[in-house]
Image (cartoon, rainbow, N blue to C red):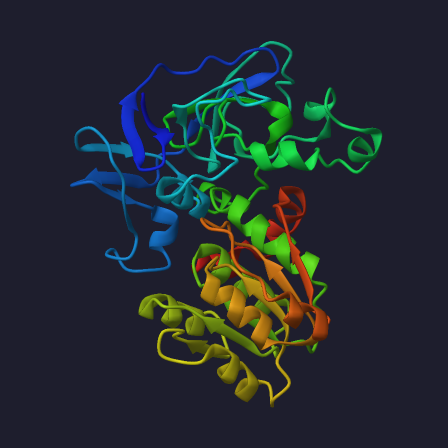
Length: 366
């Protein structure tokens, strides 16, 4: 089967590898073939982002051997792009991963949906029957880390932070969604609710990132928001916020013309080009001089960090969603004197699955 194999920054290759076999407690999943990745002239096209921007803007330059075409319903995470451009600690490298034991090359893809085609031993066929549509939860649960975890971590279902930062399936081994098939332990799978398409299923993981970021922010009715970066997660954040808070002031900062247009189409109060406008000033004008209550940083640049701290009101909240290629400089004098709450978030897929059936149509337009 064809697979996108990560060898390190600047080196992703499309290769032929053997199909996986479902081991004990696993199922074999066929990554759905409703989208086509076209790899031609060293361009890597991301269908999930393709909903959000023009063809010219959704091509990522990737090194590979030869021109290939293969089908998959799996999206390329922004983290994958960052890992291609710069070393990211949680991605596989030459040192064996603490959980998977794998080194590069590994198969990429942690945002995907698919259909079960084979069952390994000791798998409940009533729940995980052949033909069942599923989505993967890329973060292992607490029991996976049992030989590492302290009781406090296990009780909260959170892995030790150092390990959490190191691991995602499709990033550090155990196969990935950018391939024809993947063998997955059923404890990392969730059945897609009836009425939720495989197309939406492939977006559940980035949707979960946006959903969890919003929960972490503590936002309530009547609050104002700045979203820095209108890529997939930025726009998902916008769509969720607008679904719950129809009258909220939501300012979006984005360089891409088409993405700014998409932001306006999907509910932004104001969509601003940070290369041509002063974002903090635009925010002050939009909020009557107070600044926004919450900032979501989905851009991951020094300029976005500066804009976030200058745009948030005193005692406001800044939630970092982005993965950074370079560590930013943070003006902690601003954080201190404005009493800014600065936080981050991992993803959380279960709550998203619980609500996805209710409002998946709201994000389907993306």
